[in-house]
Image (cartoon, helix red, strand yellow):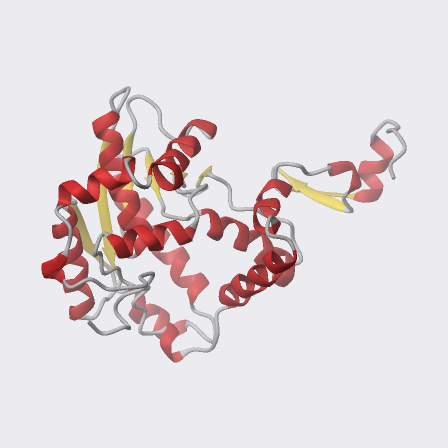
Length: 295
């Protein structure tokens, strides 16, 4: 297999040596119950991501994260405590034919009933993007996914962002954006207010997704972008390396990044934004009552 086609795997297992699908599915609530399944259900419960009667569009890119998410939703359907519906959707942004073939092979192996539709995002990005096309590409992809979810009558759109994506986003915004801004587990779009975006992999660490993917014999896609390959660097990889260095000093550093978003002492901030309105320190300070002395 061409290494450019797959990502997230330590070992690529030949197709003829793949596990039976029943073993792939059993592993989720078996060997990987603690590191994957329990983290998945905890996020669903903590953030109330799924409710009775939901119709959820599960976005599949072909990467390791979304492939696992698809199987988690299928497993959840088997264990469901209430009725909800799922649509597995994939937008082809202009994949090379071999990349699309790999995607289709994966979903056939994993028995995911995928609805695939096409867009010309790679071509558009190639024409207009400069050094860093990834942000624009992500926004365009999401717009197409929202539109497809609405077309299918879905009220929720599930994306495969995992624990490390969340913590890296916090650091990315601080280091490069000068903001303290997290990646929420769910949100409503201004353009598609009838659809709620949810992130069910919120607590699942990437290292376990990689391990599961490799062990199950899945050959996931990388982003498969022909545009980014011709542009320079990706800030997220820099942040990923930075966090790894921080963990050498404090093994709990990454978990503490996430915890910090739950323990914000607003009165100590120089400013904050709420409901789109910016509040500066001087105004906020003059309006609030006295507080206990702080160290």
